[in-house]
Length: 68
Image (cartoon, rainbow, N blue to C red; front, side):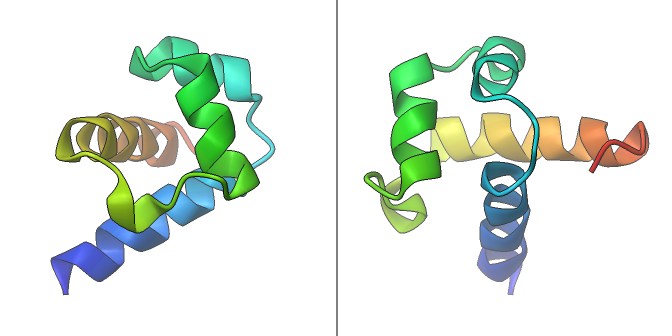
């Protein structure tokens, strides 16, 4: 159940209008990695826990601020 929530949050982030550069910068992730996930080249199911955790923390901040 938790994995479905994580997957949904990350999918929502990847499908948002938030610029790729901003997400990469604010999550301290590689821009190329971010672009791969957004384009579908990288699969969310194969994402490392470290990156997924950064994205989930960022989604929570966005939700708190009403941006997502």
